[in-house]
Image 1 (cartoon, rainbow, N blue to C red):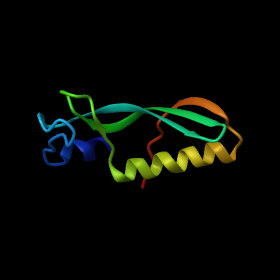
Image 2: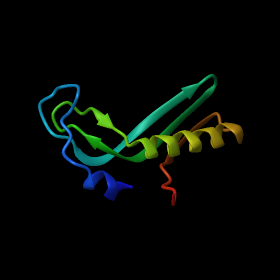
Image 3: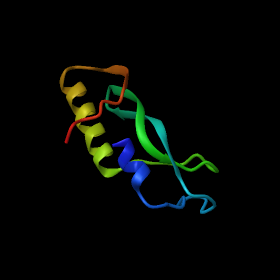
Image 4: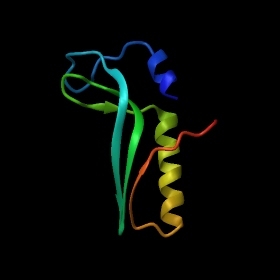
Length: 87
């Protein structure tokens, strides 16, 4: 998926409108009720000027699936690495 991000056409940051985003990774904190999950190492496009991050739709969908699985398993508080799926 990271290679997919690198192959995308240039994308100017929507927030600062100053610079094209670059491929990288980010961390996301998800909270719902008593559940708090931090997922690290997510592939993203990042603005080098303001730091805004943009995540591909398939990466976001995979992240939400992982978080839902963890919540169903009874996880309340966790920090883990993003798991890429073979779609």
